[in-house]
Length: 123
Image 1 (cartoon, rainbow, N blue to C red):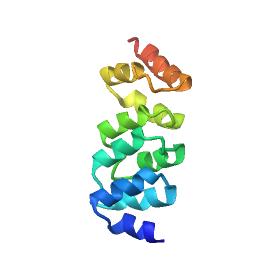
Image 2: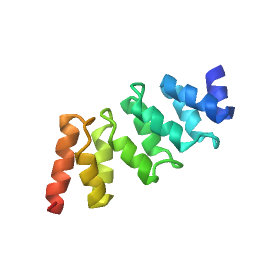
Image 3: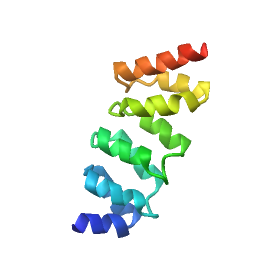
Image 4: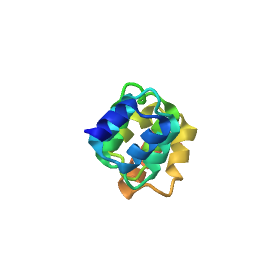
């Protein structure tokens, strides 16, 4: 209860700490807090605490879902569900897709999705 209240009202530093705990019930209210900086989300996505559930919370959130740099950070995360690759890869520029293909953090299934997108585009 206290963490959820902090997530709704906290400062950027508090929000960053709460995000890094990775609890889905706390991540959701953090995303609604207007004080949450995008950089804190990037750091969270690079951490081991980012789960498919919390990644999808960010990817679906109305405030965050249309930010290109955040989309790329989500797609670079090895725990990102395939649905986000299927939704976002076709809309990305070729250079962005090639950059994702060179990422060393992706799992084989994710790399395959990116290769298929590059083949579809003839790149």
